[in-house]
Each structure stands twice: as structure tokens, then as C-alpha cells.
Image (cartoon, rainbow, N blue to C red; front, side, top):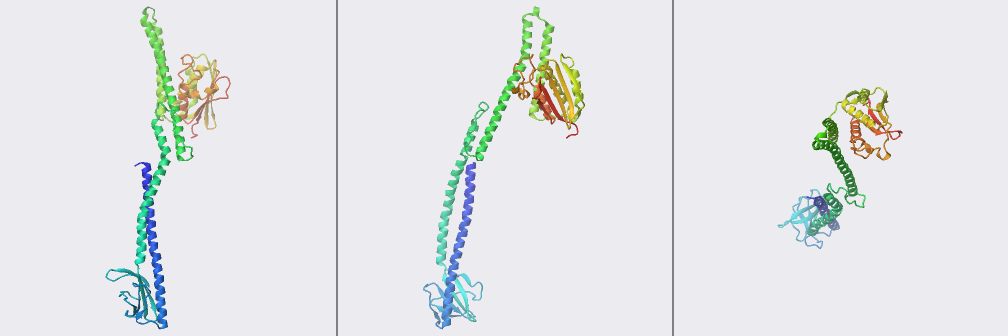
Amino acid sequence: MGVRAGVSAIASIVVLLVLTVAAAALVTAQRAVLTDSVDEVLQRTARSISDSLDAGTGGEILPGSGDEESFALVLDGSGDVIAATSAAPKVEIDPSASPKSATVEIGPDAARFRVRAEPYGEDLTILVGTPLDDVDESVSALTRSLLIAVPATTALLGVVIWLLVGRVLRPVERIRARVAEISASNLDQRVPEPATRDEIARLAHTMNSMLTRLEATAARQRRFVSDASHELRSPLTRIRAALEIDLAHPETADLRATHRGALNDAAQLQSLIDDLLLLARLDESVPSRTSAPVDLDDIVLEEVQNHGLTDLTIDASRVSAAQVIGDAGQLTRVVRNLLDNALQYGRSRVVIELAEDDETAVLRVSDDGPGVPPGMQERIFERFARADDARASTTGGAGLGLAIARELVALHGGSLILDADHRGGASFLVQLPVAGSR
């Protein structure tokens, strides 16, 4: 059952129940009001007979009230009739019983009468009664009218609710139809947003925001695949070209140079594939890592020593002790990527600083290279993004180092940013909680 049919059905059932209860209460109230009116008439009749008896004008035959079916009786203490209207029926009722007014069935056809007993003198009782035909007919007429009005009103309200719900859900249906048309090839489409400020308008706005994020994600994914394909194809192309040249000109082939170039390209391929696999694991879930105290200064000094064979000067004189909690292997990867980036773009000097500031370990890696253009200061942390757009291996790496470093730092509860205030090159700032601070 759809939402429209379900809401209409539930609303109709609720309306039917409410109207049924209200109709039953109305019928009951009408019968009570009419019965009270009959009781007042009977009370006045009994008082009139009492006045006649006081005046001494009453006899064995009481005067009628103008209604042939109404009657009046005067009973003694034993219940014998000492006076009555003409053709008064025999009533089986205890004059001393309570309440004074009651509904009884009289005669062979069990006609319903309303009777009232009023005491007179010391041992006499005046008993008056009248049929309830008018009351029953009035109540029956009201009941018949309600039996028609309640279902008709319920049906009418059901139709109105059906139309209103359909009108309310029409924008939702338009949104659903538009979403059904959107696929991976046309993520630039958006769902229509109603001009109202209700929940449906907010739903449409939220869906459009989601589609915007999906479009941006898909664009990044396509760019990632394109860049990855290019980075993987470049070393393969060099290897193939070198082998084809050697095969075409074996007399001039330098096998040692070919092997050395192929080995370098294979190492580059392996490094790129390792980076891609690490990023894939970071995307899928939080990778497992050990959590133990790590001396970050030891990692920094060890990586500086490993990068000793370089034309640039690496200044690590401002590296002081700093201990953090995390995975030593992943933190080594962060330091290595930052140092590789600085050595790649630095001209003559790379400076590494490490110190504890309150409850934070601050690592800064700076170079004296060309720096990062203002429009690239955040984009360089995206995958395959570099300050230069060229993809030649001589001008930079694959553009994954900073992306991997930032995600690993975030995994350790820290942050990696580019210091925009630094002048004369680029300066990357890593902040990690020190051991014991969390």
C-alpha cells in the first residue's frame, strides 16, 4: 500500500470511529433530553391530580389528560386501585420502589411507557404514565439520519484527504522521477526544489546537496583513475620503448643501461602501486595499526640519515625529543613523504624542526624551493595533485605523498597543513598529540 492510500485509509478509519462515537453520544443525549421532558410532564400531571384530590373533586374516575394512551392511577398502601382514568391499564410496579420515574413495558405487545409515582397523603400513591412512542420515533429518525450521514461524511472526507495527500506528495513524486533519471553519466542534474519552505523543500535541497557531493566525488574519481593510468603507463612505456629499440638495433644495444633503466622504472611502478594500495585501504576502512609510544625524534633523525646522499643540505639541528602514541611504520611514512617532497622541490636547503608545545608534538619540514601558489595550497593534499601540472617524472613524483601523509596524520588524531605565512619556499606543519595527552 502506498503512502497516499495508507494515509487516506488511516484518516478515514479514524474519522469513522470519531463520528460513530459522536453519533452514539448524540443519540443517547437526545433520548435522555426527551425522557426528561416526559418526566416533567408526568410530574405536572401528578401534581394536578394531587390538587384535585385536595379540592375534593376527585372520584373513582379521574379526568383524562387529553391523550388516550396516557393514564393515571391512585393506589392505596396495599397497591389496590382506588381511582383511575378510564381504560387505565394494569401496571405491575411497586409504588414504594426507587426511582420515582421508570420505563416499563405494558400490555401484550409490550408497549414502552414512562411512569412516575408520587406519594400522596400518608399511604396513597399517584401513578401516572404516558407512552414513549414519540420519543422512540424521534430517536429512530435521528439514528436513521446518522446511519446515512456518518458513512457519507466519512467517504467525503476520505476523498478530500486522498486529494490533499496527492497534492502534498506531488513534489515528492517529481523528485522521485527525477532521481530515477539520474545515473553516473548525468550527475549534473538536480531535483526540482519547491518554492515552499516545508519539509519537502528541505528534502529536495538536501538531495541536491548530496548530488553535488556525488558529482564532485565522481569527478575526483575519474581524475584519479585518469592520473593513475597515466602514472602507470609512463614507466611501462619507457620500458617497452627501451626493449623495442634494443630488439630493433641489437648491434648498438646497451643491455646494462637498458636493464638499469627497466629496474628503475619497475621500482617506480612498485612504489606507485604500493601507494595506491595504501590509499585504497585508507578509503575502505580504518587500517589496523599498533598503538605504542613512539619517539618521533628518532624517526626524523633516522630518515635524515637515510637521505644523506643528496645535493641539498638537510638541517636537523632543531630536532628535539618528542614522544607520541601511534604506529612507528606509519609515522615513518609521514616523515619520509614530507622529506622526499622537500628534497624534490628545494633548491639548496631543507630544514626540519621538532619540539613539544604543551600537549602537542610539532614537526615542521621546510624547503627553499619555489613554494606553492595560493590557489594550490589546499589542493596539493589531493591525490595526484602537484604544484606543477606537468606529469614528467623529472619534475616531481606521482603526487600521492602529501595525500598519504595527511590521511595517516589524521588517523593518529593530528593535522597536516601548509604554513601559508612561510616565505621563501614551502613549509609543512604536522601536529600530533604527545604521549599521555589523551
